[in-house]
Image (cartoon, rainbow, N blue to C red; front, top):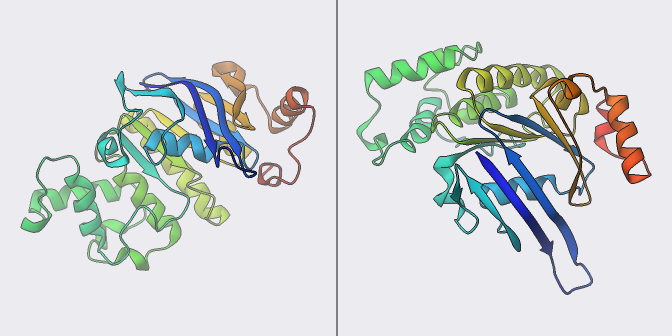
Length: 266
């Protein structure tokens, strides 16, 4: 479903600010995998997501989605294969447009020709209402509300829903609960679990919250200094605790995740 092989990415190469963001990264997600990614700041998590999404191109290596080589494809050229929810609740929506208009725009990506200019049909509006009802937030009764007036949690729930409209091969969740207060973060975590399970989505989720990384998904990877340094899946992952993860990091790297939000989220 998603394969990354021998990925290298260096920023500011040949300067005093040179930084190896990713070094010889291999990652293979099978159909239906839900992989959580943790690591200290600067570990390479965001670079990994941006390479998959097409915002960046690797210096070396290959990226395959559904066996298709997308390594050199630009972001818009692979957008139908990828759904993405960002950390910023405003990033995945158009705040000046209504909920209905946002959903129509997202749904149009599944069709060769956009239907937005023709207006939303009655049947399509019913579809939008049914989808919104599944969130349990009452948004189905607010189709004409401007998205900019929604709370952060409501916008993230809407972004998560719209990211599934294209039936993506890969769903990327880029710290999508980090900017929310604890109660809203818990809500979006629960909705994430429901939506991913219902749609059987192959998912890669970056998080600073170690407990969230343990609670969600069937696989977990830990990154540090541009490399994947630890992996666990299935029963092994289920047996993990935050303390065990910290111990594993210290054992592998010889130091602790000092001054990192991953510890604070424990």
